[in-house]
Image (tube, rainbow, N blue to C red):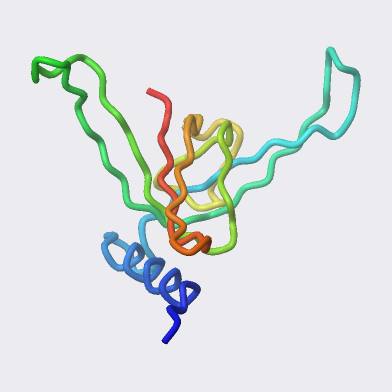
Length: 130
């Protein structure tokens, strides 16, 4: 019997949405900027906003000897639902795309890790800048 990874991905999405404090999961909006032309020294850009559902984790970093250092690691976990986040996209946690503006509290995605058993993406871990 073969494993249906698309079905498992849908189950992961429902699980992430179920652990949030809202009915439809904890929202975050990913902003992707695109160049629309203009001069190289003054390009024109546009932004697209995509709402995703996430789980958020904040970890304090330890040094080699086990003591905490003044650095924390912020990671978002989202299901692979068709939208693929990219390194250098921005994310605003706690708002939907309809609530997002250029002045929202945007944080840069510094790393995207994909969990893809059998080559099918099931979830993404997004590491955020400090």
